[in-house]
Amino acid sequence: MSKKQLILPRTDENGDYYISYSQLSKWKRSKRDYMRNYFFGEKDDNAALQLYGDFGTKVGESYENNDFSVWEDDEAEFLQTLPSLDEFERVIRLKMDGFYVLGYIDTNTEAESDGFKYVKELADYKTGDIEKRSPEYESEDYWQVDIYAAALAQEYGHYPEKGSVVLIGRSGNAFAGEDLNLTLEAAIIDRPISMERCDVVLAQVQEVAEEISAYYTAYLKLIGLI
Image (cartoon, rainbow, N blue to C red; front, side, top):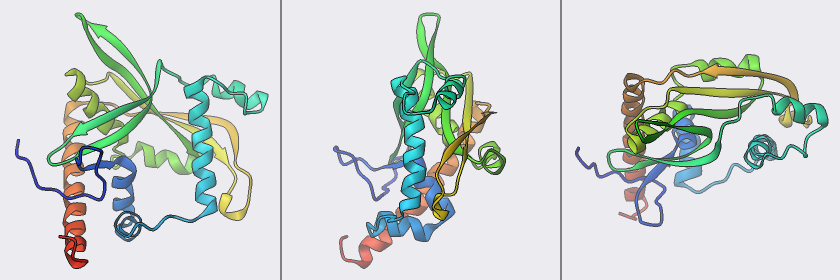
């Protein structure tokens, strides 16, 4: 496989370029916002966005630590009825051409076949309005589970058998100063995994990364850094 000369805004301790799924999503949503954050180093100084992020983190940490004491009794009971697998926050590094994708699988479980281990199932936790957000995670444009599955296939030589998004209902509008709360509803959205689907997604990821690299290289030249 060729080694493209990509230049991306983020490098690891070894100087290797990487990108995250959130970066890929932001670029697709708004090139302007992406460049503002990752080229110019501007932060999203928005208290409401921070509240939404903190709420999602609170949910994820409850599963990771198996500690639901920060929730009301009915909320804690509800959360414990949802899928929770064996391992949490597994780091993945999906090797691409000239960079890698860095990510964290919310929860997964391993299995063994003919003496070889592989990840059998993975799930990604999301919070939000179920009716409004479900179409996003059902869409062909949602890549996160496929990226994780491809990374696991690179590591184990075997694709996971099952992937899903656990969309946990959340009410309240932080932008309007409203408290965020669980609705005690959830949707389990199946994301079928296949080599063919992952190949399509990886081609799109490569294309996005190369586009970011072209813009970023032009920016660095403009400000005289290369």
